[in-house]
Amino acid sequence: MSRSSEIGYTRRDLFMRSRANKTEPAPVITHILPWATSDDIADKCTGCGDCVSACQEQIIVLASANCASVNFDKGECTFCGDCASACSEGVFWEEDIRAVEKPWQGLATAHDGCFAHKGIVCEVCKDQCPEAAIKFRPQLGAVAIPEIEEEKCTACGACVATCPSQAMKVHFAAPVSEAHKEEGASA
Image 1 (cartoon, rainbow, N blue to C red):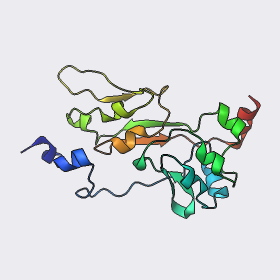
Image 2 (image 1 turned 120 degrees about the horizontal axis):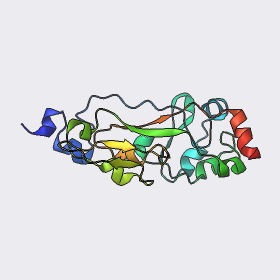
Image 3 (image 1 turned 120 degrees about the vertical axis):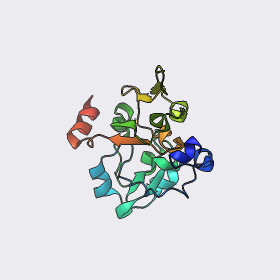
Image 4 (image 1 turned 60 degrees about the horizontal axis):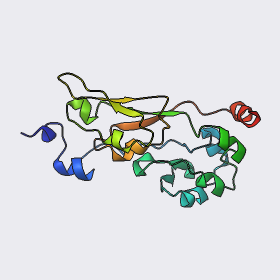
């Protein structure tokens, strides 16, 4: 019996990212956009779709309650700012704040479903990370597992869509408060 069939993946699953044989539910998309708080998205987003069509990477979707949100299963955020520029509803922070503030507070993580955690050599996430925030430190007698450098990770999601085991996720910290946005404007 092959190692891939022992863990429930076929060759097609591994190389084509086919989800036909998997019974995992679709990912829950939280309301997250670069340079916007969850509260602003919920309160101000009208679902007009301007940010959706402006997104060059096509990762912004209209999610629950017809609010825009990033879906990293579709790709990565390049932080180009086109979504914010296209929005006329005031969902995103002002341009002067966007220029000095991080787009969000988040971190990529590898869950137990990661092939490396199962003893299978895979470094796709590292290869896709534009910030080189994912490292695989060699281990004697074992497969190297991913280590995410928090100070380098921008939570762009580049590692999520390309992960063949769907083990990479981006976790976000509490939304930035209005007070913090005002501090950023005066800095």
